Amino acid sequence: MSNSRLVYSTKDSSRCPGCHKPLRKCLCRLVQDKGKPRQVIDPAIRISRESKGRKGKGVTILSGFELGETELKTLAKKLKALCGSGGTVKNGMIEIQGDHRESLKQELEKQFTNVKLAGG
Image (cartoon, rainbow, N blue to C red; front, side, top):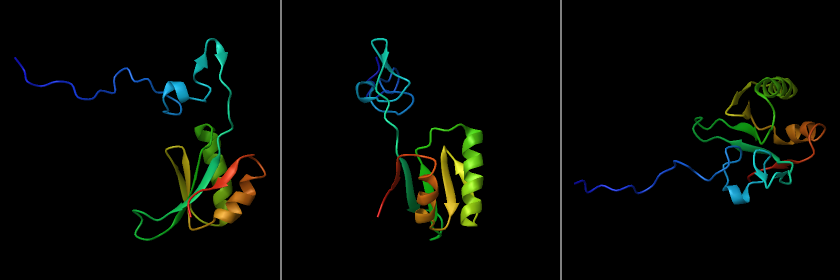
């Protein structure tokens, strides 16, 4: 007889695969309620600055895009050219070297409706 017992399991999770919120709080398109799609709220595009893990070098991080991989890379290329700096696309987020929050916000507001600066 074993003295071990299951303490925690993520199997059969009741979380939405899109937004990772509990299904009862999910507002994304992937979950439907009784055959009717739930109300879709335009997610905010967040612009923040981070230097953690980069030896003090700051990067501007853009997240919250609902774009495909190719569209995200195209947008990143355009924004990098606007700022005149390098960057990359990682995990659905765009990282641009340096602090360019204000200029990126002005540019993104031309294309998207809900753009917000995140952090201090």
